Image 1: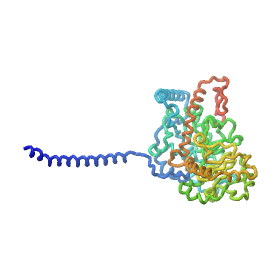
Image 2: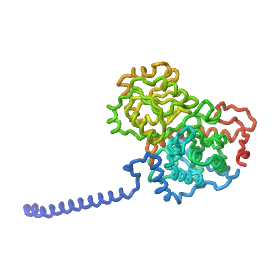
Image 3: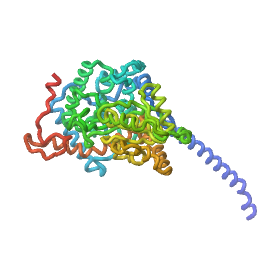
Length: 508
């Protein structure tokens, strides 16, 4: 009996085990299939999409394919008319409630990430119409400035207003930056972005038409309750070409300006208009194609030129050093100094020369900066910066001593000094420069979609550092007594007075 009792259940046990095993496998397949289906149903940014770094190509795609998706934007609370004191008071109360709540709940407030940016929905004549104007005319390469520079090439160099705006207004599902988020209510914003294409309007409109549009943009922005609340201190203006917005910018000197540099001579900016405390230096858009890892590897043995420069040798202001350097370096062995333009042929010649050179001379132009610096960086050519007044982009984050040779004008002008200095650098030091350039180049490549650690990303990281100081000066300006003595010694901020800065003479 014991033997029968022991042996008879064995077949049923095997059957049960087999049944359970088959059920488990089937269940596992079903769960994996469901899990895979669930994962693919979630929308994430497609990181396989190659970012577009050409302004013309990106703008073409934006206008033809993306604008239609933006025709019905998320409705925000942009004021479509002049606001009054009651609007300003209500906004201030809502901001206070938000900030007081975050102060008690968020240990990282007020400098936490992401920063929150409100993008004004300005009339199309300030935004889309100007982009279409460029798109429809950029092939007219004969259109040039008085010194022969192609106008549309200049607009491309200073197109930071396009790259920042195009990223901010893209659907969140397509954006890759974690440092900034767009908000649609003014009381939720840390900063306010003014999407007016000041450079395009300056170069492509008739002079009086441009000035009239500047005045209209000024009135539109200064009528907003958020502007009146802070006197513009938390507003961001892309004024990247030193000639743009010039006729009215004294009325927005409290705002954050996005600039190519800060000229201390007074030729481009009046005293008190710009400062590192409130403004931000952004890189030019490179004129040449990026030399990627494969390009850098292939070009390394071909870099037989010691020092290269191609550009205009006759410039004004601090740029006069170009002609002196050109005369000093002319005919020196392994040094190429040539006159050139910014046209398509000039671009290819400059790009080829930079990729065959170890060092690229980057002297001051009409302003302390020039696009040549960023052309050199993305070409893998070690910049030799000769510009005593230059302010550099993102210097709170990036260390330019690791990627560039910085030389004073007085040293560079000594006969033979510059070439001897470059030749004295050890090969290991040159290699270190090149390795760092390969890592740094991504910080200067504007793209769509904007990339983490790209210039758009670093822009918002730098602006985030200004937040606490802006709040300080905004609240201080709201409580000072008219006629009281000023204790604020910084030229970039108004005295301790509530006296109005009337726009009526201009806007009338």
